[in-house]
Length: 533
Image 1 (cartoon, one colour):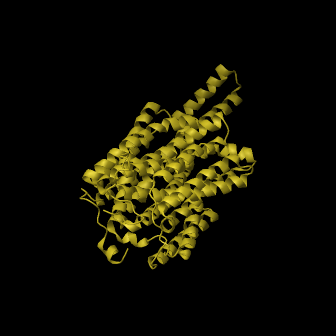
Image 2: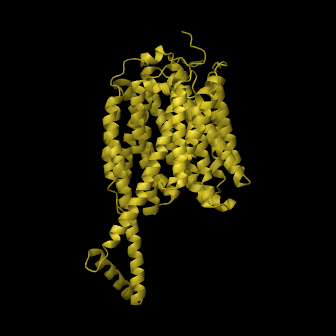
Image 3: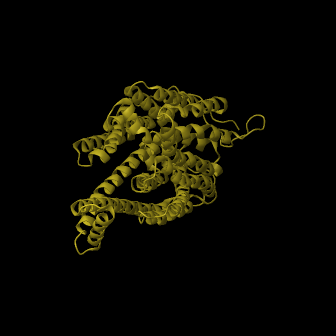
């Protein structure tokens, strides 16, 4: 059987010389490069204070080291499908990974802050091309009966990258120079580029496709403004004119972009894919899952560092069991999806996560780290069962020639939903912490338990510390207020986890819409095929 030019054969024949089958070579080639990109999403977070001191810039300015990266990635993702069609997957992957690697070196050598920001933007833009390409390429390289297993392996860097980033970055910042945070990409990047050149098969470019210029402009404005506006919520609040203006303008452009794309013969992102019921249902589940899972993931490091006093390195080590658990559960869940379909695998995962999230909503300042590790291991098992099966189900409903387009659409919208979820949960933590602090402060009265504790603390400072009564009273009140603030923050996290618990339960019931047992290759929606899409 001869493969169509530019496509990978689904039978995945063995490599010349009796080596690894081509499908496994594709997995071997793509995962290291993807891990480097996803690692860089968080590895710089712990270096912000050091970067601000090194370049003499303020907090608001140094945040652009993260914001510029995220915005460029969000803007590039919708363009991946056209660029792949125009230049072939292999060329785009090699060039994007090379630019990412060279940009990492430029970040490490940056003599001025503006050079660092330009390099971070280049990193984000090239990395934003890589994720949708990797999804569609893996899907095409593996036969239908093994795609679940492949996507299970694909889940490993998605969790391992962000989990290892703070640990690795914190260790490097603590023991060496901030510049090494960027240089660690160099050996992996070079090796990944060489592997791609050696093993990926060349495709055939399609030169006649028209570039959707209007769609590109609208998507850039839509995703750029929305993502930037959402990134400002934690600092400026939802009531800020800047936040409201940016998010409002971005959503208006997103509406215009969607409307415009529906009527285009060669759209940048084919919104008509949502006319496929399975694709629509899978994405709806994926969006709810994103709020339930990734919105919650940002709270754990804050709890461990701000309330339990762990360093960035220790926090990463604490979170590591969750990543390892995903690494075990992902491939197993993928294999189960191949055998029995996504529905029951995903529902089991969300059931596990619902129970786990309910337990996390009851964390206290005295929860043992051993208990927390077990909770994270269980959470990793749930993540492994839910992360990739929904995306796999969405991709299986799409015609082969639109898979990169579908992957770009999936990732672009998921990034926006994820930013919205994080901004919303951060707001819940902030506002509810203030409310709980006020409520707890009102309880410190003469005849209440907190009031008696305050009195006893003041007496102890006088008797054991030799402090005068007035000074002991002020010191005791300061200690009490600090404790109240900690307790209020824990309650704020609990409220945010309660919201994610509701989202997880909703995702559990939505997962019933996913297909059950798979029977061979998925069949695209007939209406889409009839329309030529």
